[in-house]
Length: 433
Ligand code: FEO
Image: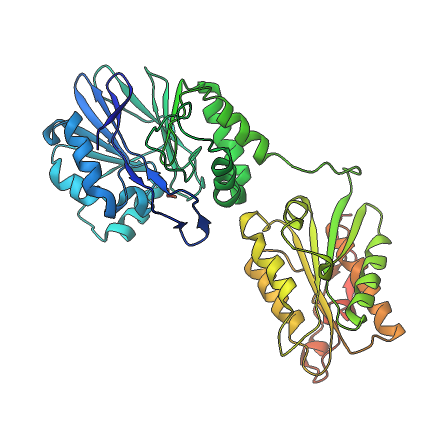
C-alpha cells in the first residue's frame, strides 16, 4: 500500500487489481490490471493525475495521503473519463476543496453523463494549454480517440514525463511496477493495442506526431508498467502497429476481397461470377476466399488493408451462416468505415441473408453503393451474368468510375421488384471520370 516514487516529487498512487480477468467485457486479462494514478508536487501546488476504479478508491486514497495533504491539492487532471479512471473522482473532489479539475474540451459532455452533476466545476483544455505548479508545468496534448473521443495526455515539462492515459498502457498487474523490473509484458502491450487502439490508427499516428518529438524520459500510462527503461521504444512500436501491415505487390490497384460459404455450390458459383465481373475492370485486384476453409481471425489484417469487401452467404433458417457473422464480428477491432461493402447469395425459399448482411455492413459504416443480389437455388446462366454485372459494378465504384444512378419513378412505383434494382436502374455517365 506504499506510494511509489517514479521521479523526485512524482509518485504513483494507483491501485492493483490482480484478480481482474475480463475488462470492458471484450478484453481478457491473464494476470489482472493496474489503475495508475500519479501525484506531482510543485513549489506552489500539488496535482493528482487520474484516479482509479471506484472499487479500488480506498487503496488510492491511502497512497495519496502518504505524499500529499488534501488541502495542498490545487490541480486534478483527468486524461480520460472511462470509469476505471474516474471512479474515485467525486470523493477526491469532496476531500480536496481547493482543487481545480482539468479535462479535455471533448470530455465535457461525458463528464456530465458520467457523474450526473451539472454543478461540478471544471476547466476544459486543449493542446498547448498548461497549468503551473510553481516550479513545474503540466501541458496538455489533445489525443482524441485513443481510445475515446475525450482522451488527452499530460506532459510534465521540466521532468519530460508523459502521463499518457490509456495510451501505451496494458492490462498487466505486477507490484514491481517499472518496465525494467516486472515480468515480460510484451504480449499484454500488443494485445491491448490490437483490441483498444487499433480501430483508431489514423488518430494514433496523429497523436504520435505530437508525442514523439517530445522524447519523453519516462512514460506513465494509466494501466500496466511505468515505462522508464527505453521509453521511446513504446511510441516507436505504436507507429509500427498503426502503419499498414501488409505489402500489396500491385500498390496502385484497389483491392476487393470476396468471402463466401456455400452449402451446395450455388453461392460459390455466384462468388466466382462476381469475381470474374470485378476482375474485368482495370485497377482492381480481386481475391476469393471460401470461409469453410478455415478460421476467420487470420483475415482481419487483410480486411484492414482492403478497399472493398463482398460477402456471399446462403440463407439457412432465415439467417446468414455463422462463419459470415464470425468474420463480421471480428472486424470490430479495425477501422472499416472507409470501405465498400456488398452481399450476395443463393437461397431456397426466403432469402433474408443478403439484406441482413447489408444491414450489418451499413451498421459498421461501410458504403453499400449497389443493392445485393440473391438467386433462388441454382443460378441460371442469365443470373450468373447478372452476378458478373454486379461484380463489375462494384469494381467501378471502387475505382471511382461508376455511372451515376438515376432513380426511375416507374420502377419505384412498379409492383414487381427487380432482382437487382441497382443494376437494372437507368444510368447516366458521371460528370467526372
Ligand atoms: Fe482505462 Fe479507457 O479506460
